[in-house]
Length: 237
Image (tube, rainbow, N blue to C red; front, side, top):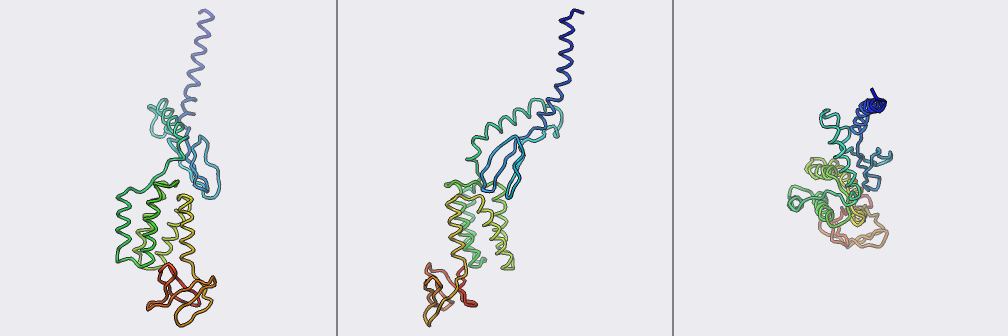
């Protein structure tokens, strides 16, 4: 056999050995969808960095697990598509639909909810509307957690309902826009207990000088919210 033919055969044998390795490497490749502590989403072919609040989702990882046939071409195309979308990852978000928001509005008026739950539901309507128009970065999983917290407002114990509201707010503190996060802080200040500095027959004043007028059901805050006096503190939630 001529020398050139021998060299071609040797090269062909080498390629046939390397090809399975190349295919296996491509099959094991994955694109990772990562969210840092601030909720910023990035895509990478490397696993997400470890750390508090880090979230990771593997996209098309190890396609060979679905079967050998087609793994040589299909994974490469899928991974390349995910990588092409990486530059647009910052604008990716999931928001409630108009029908979802309408259902929230109906739920917020339910007579079966107590006042705190209704206030929470009104806040949820606001957050749902803010999602689409502001720079939020919620995932489908985030909204699933929010929905669970909403359902938990039907729980019998107030402690359980309050815990559910707290978990929902924690979810919003990561996925919400900066504007909504500021509104959440304002809500927390609104709901905080106010230490009473002094009272007379008509009203009480907190340490900051804010007046709370006495009413038949307790006290009325400056924003019209109903407040109760207990252990020297006004609860206006």
